[in-house]
Each structure stands twice: as structure tokens, then as C-alpha cells.
Length: 133
Image (cartoon, rainbow, N blue to C red):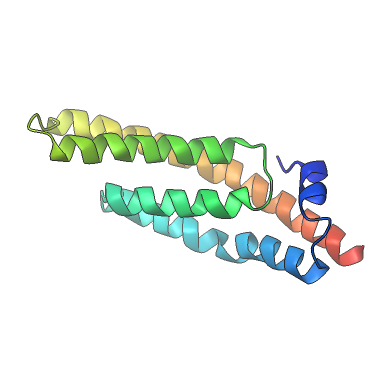
């Protein structure tokens, strides 16, 4: 998932402590971000969910990943956009259609939790490498 060559190239001129801070940002914020995403899904808050998904993508983008987590977050953002656009439209979504959208989000979120936990493990490994080197 983490493109280590790209990561090393991107951060080759950075102080080791800065690189560790970047990795720690993801590691330390991970569980809180997952909880926030889950809560916004449960609350059916597409605006907050979209913002949190976008913020999570930014953190992930800092660690140079070529992973599905980024795409999953983009998909969740896109579904949130559809829900938000429908809320502004004269033709509102039916309750059934809205439920389908949230079920899509729930399905994607379940997969996101699995893939992002793998990314978390890789980030921890990468952190150990930076500590050792």
C-alpha cells in the first residue's frame, strides 16, 4: 500500500523528526477518524461525513500511498455529494433511495476499515524503519 520508494524520495530532504511526525499524525489520529466517520454515518450527516472523509484523505496523501483507502474515501465523498445535491434539488430522494445511498456508504466503510487497518500496520512498520535508520 505505501509506496516506500516514492515516500523515501518525497521526504529525502526532510529531517527524520518531521518524517516521524507525518507518520505519527496518521497513526495517532487513525482510531479517532474511524470513530468520527462511523458516527457521521450513524447520524446520517452527509456534510460532516464528506468533510471528515476529505480530511482523512489529506492525512493519507501525506504518506504517499497507492492504496484503495484513498479511493474508498473518494467514493464515500461522492455518495455524500449525491445526498447533499438531492437535498438541494426540487426532486428529493425517496426514503428508499436515500437508504440505498446510506447502505452503499456503510458497505464501503466496512471495507475501508479493513483496508485502512492494513495501511495503519504498514505505517507503523515504516515508522520503525525510520527510527532504526
